[in-house]
Length: 74
Image (tube, rainbow, N blue to C red):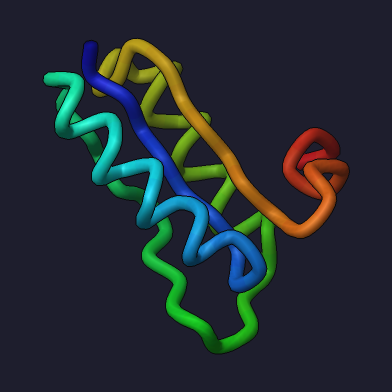
């Protein structure tokens, strides 16, 4: 499965671990909204992931932030 994934600054470690796991499972990952440990806004990450699913670039999307609420709102 082709999966778009992204995280804000609070989810960087989790998304990196998840990418490794999904790659081992044979999934193709499209990493959107590269955010390192510096602070970044969740809407800047959520939109590209959602758009890649809408556009058919990915079959599914995974968004990670501190609580999950911000990504849901976006």
